[in-house]
Length: 347
Image (tube, rainbow, N blue to C red; front, side, top):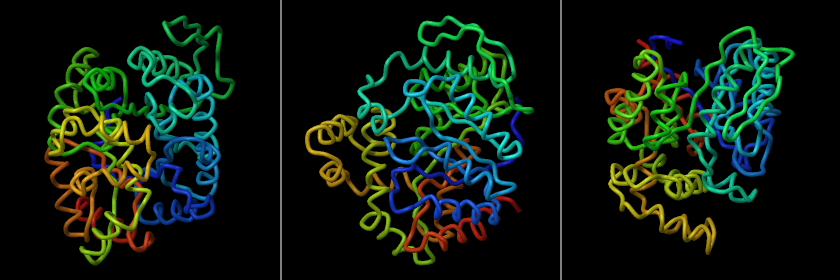
């Protein structure tokens, strides 16, 4: 399915942000809609709040903004159940659902005793194929290497094509995204890695007879914004444990090529993983250099955010997600993004 010929700007949260209650999350979504963000993404991480129940609340409180889970995985939830949940969300929201699939990260798989990662390419290939068939209203019998369905059918399939975004950063998963997905979720990569992303996407696109017009390249970036450039940096580096925690998990799950393109040691992932396992999150955060946090972030005032985004657009990214958008004042941060940054690109 060809993508709309425009840049997308969205916001996203992972639900381990414990200070953001369901009521506050709904208020943020209402403000995001008012400020004309494209999609409101919620990530599934660990055993915190349920992503689909929160998305249902947001669906009833908004009218225009697209909404979706980013990312749910086929290890902890069967793809047929994911399809049913997304179809229900699309019905509740009056056809505004998006869908994000991925192999899951250490924050969700390890606590539940799942292997990191068990046949991820095969599992995600089968998950995309079966989920899309179900969402199209087909009766599906499928005996794959991992996923099995016997005469499964959604009783209330969506009345529209729901975009499926695949979380992918490694070469084989990026090729799979190019082959089968409507969009790719890069999960935050340094700008120097985008050229590698496009090379691998092209492999999959050519395999399925598609072009770059057929896929949305989405990069979520941890975000700290304020009118005062210095205060935005201070908040990012010292005052926001959510961003610091997410950076620790992000680095632990990054391959060595990503780290190298960020100007970091190729073995930093192994070091952070070891500290996470042996000592915990707080010690892992202390071991992360400030440079690592900045490499995966958009930070500063409106002018500096625009410069940062321009780097990614020039590299080939078509969809920016302001992930865990924070600052000394979150409402003001969203206003700066929605009233000063995004309009600059939509002129």
